Length: 206
Image 1 (tube, rainbow, N blue to C red):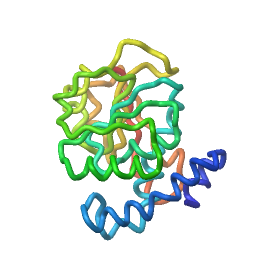
Image 2: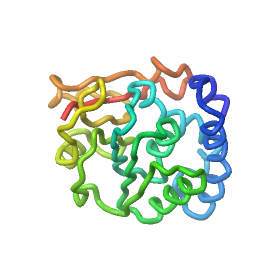
Image 3: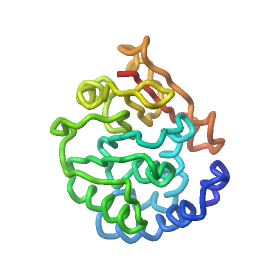
Image 4: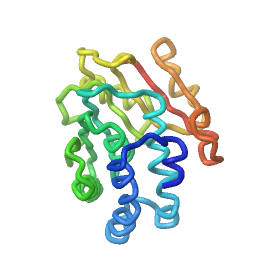
């Protein structure tokens, strides 16, 4: 939790409670359904929660924004973002049912009323959203190809609607097809810990 409060000191008491509850919930669920590497569960807040919140440093979503978390796994980045933006609607989607179940149970346990989940392939989702977010799900061109259909034409944020990904390493090749409509930001611009030194927030306008 210190990592969260260090970079987001103005969160509400309710948000603090929700973030604080995540460790025990994920630890318990992870012992039954492996959604986080067992070696990594001790780094939940740094490697998973705070990493997800790099998107909250990149953009402040306006109330009423709709977001699909594509390939949400156990709920990242969707659940931390849903805590941070309680007036934004999140749809967490994954093709692996047991992972979606963990995300749904944790969202319910901490009282997130702005989250719904679907056990589905992204190709099957027809709804429109302001943004699609993901964390290291697949190569960017493949992600854009699948999710382009889901981006709404109605704009209500300072940033045009599109896809926001958390990625790592050299993004030159992956982003080459989008050089005129993309932005790459180093997560280390937001968070100083060594873990983030090669992490990126990648935005593509769609």
